[in-house]
Image (cartoon, rainbow, N blue to C red):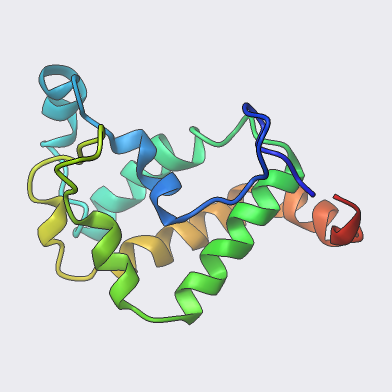
Amino acid sequence: MLMHPFLDIPYNPNLGHFLGGFDIYDREESLGVELSEYDPGCPSDREFLISRFVVKRFAGLSYRHKFVLFFMLGEALDGDSKVFAEVFEHDPISPSLLPPGWDEMKDPKAFFEDVYVKLSEAWVEDLYKASQEDFSTW
């Protein structure tokens, strides 16, 4: 079983993992101000945001972790579209906070579709390498 890269628990990523780089909790005056300049619903802004805050964030993961994360995203994109809006909803109990207005994105699935495309480009070698292995041995 593939273990979390930083914790001694199994690695079971979810869609929220892709939004971790946008967490402005206790950074509203720095990262929050920076992110307020971009509209995640705008394709060109989204491309920049994904490159800087998603692709770079996961650069240190192993090829196996990238593969599992990418595979999970692909399965989510093939499933119910409602899950994408739900991951952007503010949870008042959570110690994380997305920028204001992100929970009102018109097409949250498009955001994750663009994440999928960007990661498939950035991780092409890692994804290929992982696909050549027997996943049951991880």
